[in-house]
Length: 57
Image (cartoon, rainbow, N blue to C red; front, side):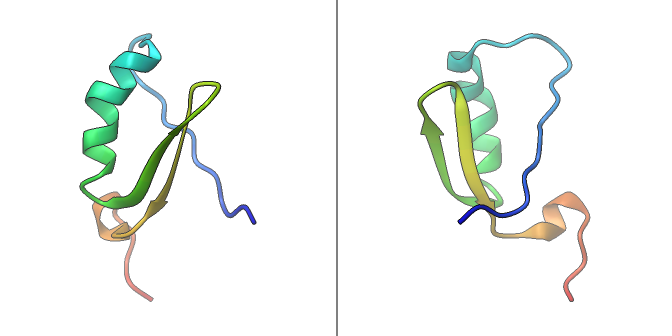
C-alpha cells in the first residue's frame, strides 16, 4: 500500500552515493524506517511531522 509521496528538491545535482551519505542521516532524525531502494529511490515514513512544520491533529 502506498501513501502520500514527496519529492525532495536539492539545490545542486547529487549522485545517489551523496544522497545516502548526506540526506539519509538527516531524514533519519524525523523519519523511520529510511530504506535505500534499487533505482535510486529512498522510501521513508515521517515519524515526527513537526520537523516539517506540520501540526499535530
